[in-house]
Length: 296
Image (cartoon, rainbow, N blue to C red; front, side, top):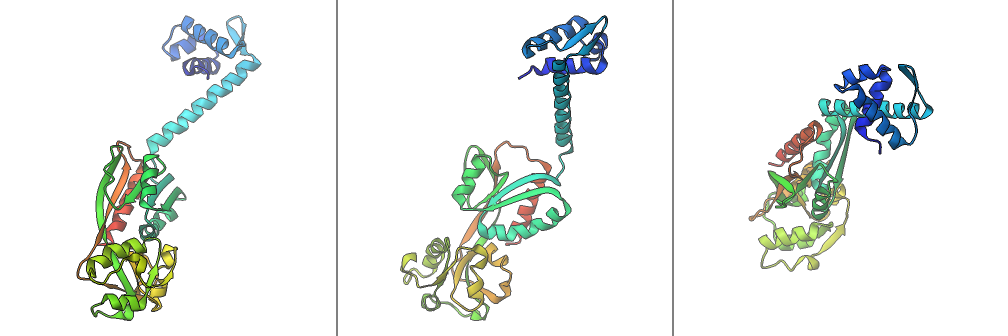
């Protein structure tokens, strides 16, 4: 790689056409300019100028190196402009969260995306362990986790919590629900549904609950947006975080049953510790916090 200082001196020399003017512009001595030129020629392995008295012309190698110097200056200018502008409406943003929270969050991002054609938002729904790994590896600017990761390289902010919900059809009414009622309906299962059952149903029906592996299952689906759909049509029951219920398009057809003992999942907004956020990532952070506020 060519020495950046020598290349910059040579580029200035080419633009001025004079050793004296180059020395004045760079606050150097004329012999210093000549020394940079000689060292750059040694590094390239060819002469870069052809002297003609007090003036000079570029050799073919000199023309190529001059083009490189101009290109590097242009790249540096674009970089400085981007850093100074720090435009919240341009550039990529990478976010990771649970599937249910992604359904709630994504519509909140649409107005910003519509108003900012140079913005590129990448939202990934994935398990908590994968979010944590991605944050540590620098794959995501922001992640939403269900617990403080308590990691030396990460910084977490508590932004709210969401209730773990027992979801029945809207016509189920407000009558108390027994475990036998749920068994008669059958569970609409999904990848996280069994752990949710062990969490919420075991807490509220300790004498009757046999364990997730022995539940009566009416059906299963792994698409987060479709999990409440059969329940909305009167088939079975399911268990979801509040965000999964709020984001469902036909949530008026659902009923969230308030059990005697309630369970909550905490929401933590996580980023790499010490990382200074760009304007666009700071704005994305604000949108995430606003979405979490919808769950109160």
